[in-house]
Image (cartoon, rainbow, N blue to C red; front, side, top):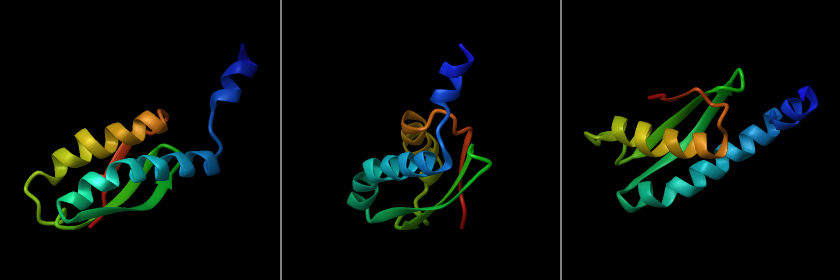
Length: 88
């Protein structure tokens, strides 16, 4: 049983690739409104820092986009992620 659990933990490289795939999935929605997103870092393999860019910076619903769109999509690709925060 322990071997099964160990096999399911992503390496840092796999985690980074999966987070980037998640951002690629959500990016077209952000770009359609004049925004974009960049991965800044992944800390302790569970805390993601991103930077919302373009129109997303001044958008009044950017925190909802971050939680409902970005964080949900990242967690779909990398369930071990606990938090996603926007760095200005």
